[in-house]
Image 1 (cartoon, rainbow, N blue to C red):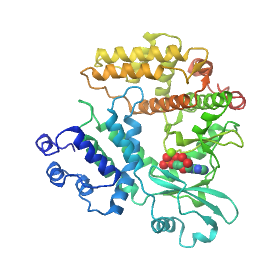
Image 2: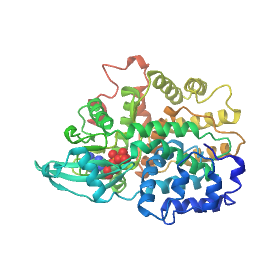
Image 3: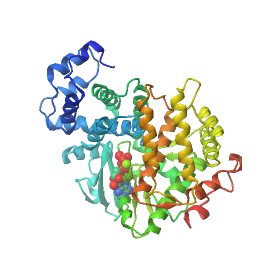
Image 4: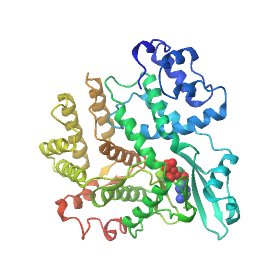
Length: 458
Ligand SMILES: Nc1ncnc2c1ncn2[C@@H]1O[C@H](COP(=O)(O)OP(=O)(O)O)[C@@H](O)[C@H]1O
Ligand SMILES: [Mg+2]
């Protein structure tokens, strides 16, 4: 899959030049790489990349290809961009984020074809209104607003045609693009990340699966005044069209303008939810993209969207994470180390420098979280973590492979942390964690954060 050495010489010299070319490709302004270079680079390479790069100035084709790769780029970016660890050079993160932004909306005709395939030819009759202009971009589709004859307001997520079939080649193409950029740290093994991205995308491409997750998640959450979830309309949902109740709401970031107590409450609720997801439900919505949380100004509730990336974790894994958190909150570094061994973060082949940095990071994080109130707005924790990450990246060692489940958890935690920072929230984190720290066996009937404790008064 990796273009081999002799071919590499044909690539325009220098990272920057290669990067510019990729940049041009990803914005779709000029979809051509240096054709000869690309051709020799890719000679004998089984990927579709060649086809993609040589696409004639056919904007539509290119837009389609990029719109597809957008899903892959999102997933891969989500997996390998580690806020604190900074495994990736910023230039590469930039390529991924440009790919993410590249999608063009489906032309109305194509949209209509998808809807007719999903709903039959006379679907229009059941609707009073259907906005062909999307209200939002989704990772592998787009979201439309509509109103049924009976007055119900819907948000309808419509998948780009051909996505499900193209996932494997999209991920492979993206992997090739990333390697082509020459920006991967030496010794960094992209394969497990590509595999995970592929598996996750396949799940996310089945909107019926997402519909089931929404229903299950709503049941787990129970009656709550803190959160609001869309309701699925099964009769209008298929693998590629997900119909939900439309929830009027604003971006969660708009809360940054709200009062301190509103900001604190929102963040406290989201952190309490994460702890419940992890330790009570063992089922976590792992995509902390800010766009997946919204704020409903009339009710003050947080709107939870996007259940494509819901993952259920093995009890063993949750057990070990629990041990790690409990040890960390008790400032017991030896027990943190032991839990990290159980989790596969550390092993007897782990380079000493990595082990040392990991323990430093754990000590930093937990000693900060133990503060009576953690002030996201003034905390310099992220900066200190980045410094440690940078120092580690300068060491001549390849980052060890972290179990994918943990990457998802790490990503979710990092995303929430960033949101807390954006909202300048002040939260008694230790107080939220505390009830979860009893022996795991004590969970169950009593539930640590039952709906009456965590959400109603949260
Ligand atoms: N039920 C809904 N009500 C209102 N807006 C919605 C609803 N579902 C999705 N959206 C809008 O569409 C965007 C993308 O939806 P999402 O499910 O997150 O797609 P993806 O899984 O591709 O990220 C959301 O950020 C939100 O702006
Ligand atoms: Mg989303």
